[in-house]
Image (cartoon, rainbow, N blue to C red; front, side, top):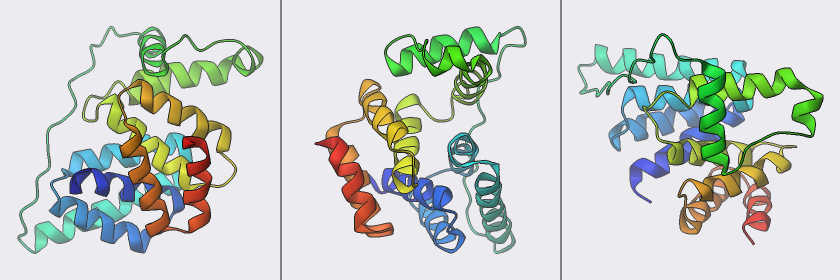
Length: 201
């Protein structure tokens, strides 16, 4: 992985864990490694769907402070491009269902999605239609972000296992997944890297 990709993994891990000191360090390194402000912002916004608004908003606060500090110090700062505007007539549910099917590889239905249809609607319309519909990050990068975040959290093994499979469907390689394992061992503790490693095996 490139230094930029490694920074994406570390930012995802520390956002999900809520470790703001190490997040600040990883954001600064990420900016130095070529990540734009808008790319980092998109990582943190996406992760609210996986680790909740409190940690997402805290992470965005860290980024906001870093951007302000760098501007005040006259440091070069690449904001990056904005997402392509979403057509005003786009139906998020229809579009999100299409994106979810493409990312997952099969249509997602039945089971808990029939049992809790509003959760199914929120996943399709909001997560896949509105969030994944922003094209600042591609699907492959979004899955690297998701796997890194889930692997750093407790009690989400079913989702981690699912997203490891989904990540492969959008082109993430075994080597890249092993880079996430290495980052978990370096950034957190051996238990987290071992936990993910068992699913890779």
